[in-house]
Length: 187
Image 1: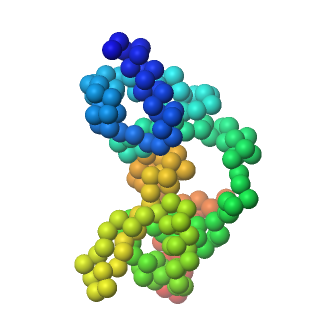
Image 2 (image 1 turned 180 degrees about the vertical axis):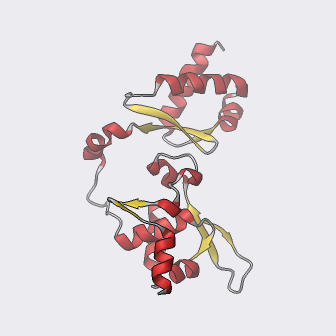
Image 3 (image 1 turned 90 degrees about the horizontal axis):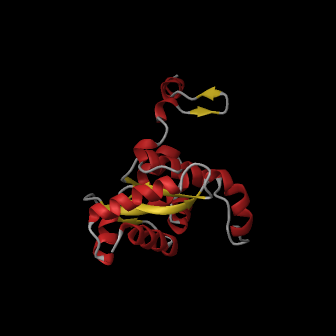
């Protein structure tokens, strides 16, 4: 198969699939050499970049077409449903804790928040923003949670290491320094 057909084939698979797919899965399923797939993906990344309506993005070791952020406000008008609910501040707080503390248990989240997190964790699982990644070898075998690929996609990042540095987060015009919070709690 010539390279133009490989490019078109991979483009059509990515478009139709609607989820991320790895080079290995593409290679095994399509019976195409990984080098040819990598070259094709590079061409597609160039084709779908900048102000294009859709972008080819890499998330961990997989690729997927996503909507360009600059057009999201318009696209969302067509995709919003009455069933979709916004996440409450408590749920967002829980999501932030999990994002910055992968493999955290619900009891550890509750220790940080100071309140029960059953609903928040359940809601995040329901939305597909977090997942159970393991069971810890502790009494009761508690579940440990981490953010999902869907969370990474929604943030436009490939890995949690790309999240803003927690120690120097800015909220509005104020710099939130963790050391300041810790010092105020000790007083």
